[in-house]
Length: 445
Image 1 (tube, one colour):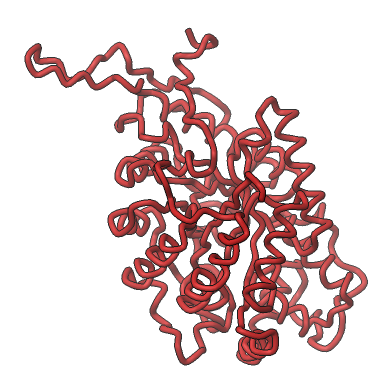
Image 2 (cartoon, rainbow, N blue to C red; image 1 turned 90 degrees about the vertical axis):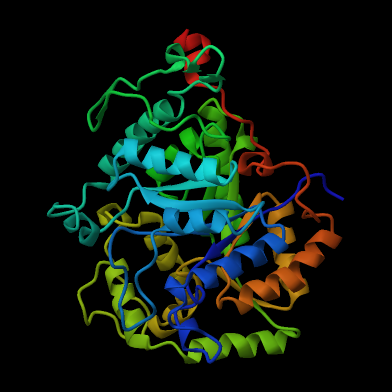
């Protein structure tokens, strides 16, 4: 019996992570904008005692409308609604440092933390792509390194703002007529290359001090950023060896950055296709693959690989000559993962599209509940993960199946909690301390 416990996050995406999930008879093509759908999913994940749930986002109309349901409710708004429908589960939203201002975003995240009683998390992304840039008056996206430089300053400003109220600023002395202590307010007073922010936040310091900080980039810049700031990392790894290498590297980087490596949790994504037998699981996987429209995947793959339309052929392997990762300004780590997967397994483009249809580069594992639990336990106990980002291929049925059939096995093996217990905040669930106010540390005294 290990004393370590898994961390499980439910990554919720409309009708499921598989691109063809919306075509199944059970699926509602309008679920992506239905609060009742997300409320049900959140309560299911909470029934499974998941640490948190996660909503991805992008400041653009993402993808091909012919391929799958497109557009999404703004995640912080949706999570605020879900905070009132749940009691325990953490609530993590993606928000871009490229197309937000620190003051407004810091306020919205602090508000969610207050409304939820300390359950908010922020997945910090830098947002690649010219489409998003043009939505904000830019002709092209900033360079990769510049996006991360801006992100670092953005986060430094946000931390100043979250610490701009001391915890005991509110006095609430009715007899003396004193509501708060102005001496315990600390204006940000920030001036840097990207931002100038003068005042204090207009929201008190939240229950967690600041939200759980999550990061998802696995490029060199992404890992450097994670080592400095992140408390949880969502990552995509296809093999145990690659996951172990990434895990060890990130923990080492975190320690060299002067932080406790135990205060950064690594959560690879996994798309579990479940069946009561292996044959049943394979049949369910085949149904999903049969519903893929190859032309949609072909266009998406050409965009990822930065190839001109028509270069790829469905029944041939990837061309021998592809742009190097150094030439990619978008999702560098995902580009490399996809190319390596195709080369390693000698996949045709059609086969590669099928492999990416469920998890867009995250590992898809098909099998019985016991086999899924075995895979999770192996990665967890062999230095590849602190937990997992669970990405059901079909929703709600995939999450129901995981909670009802895999979670009990993990509990029986002593790997996962049976109840939430006294720890109430998301930070406490992830085994993280509440951060001290930087203005009260010796460096700021």
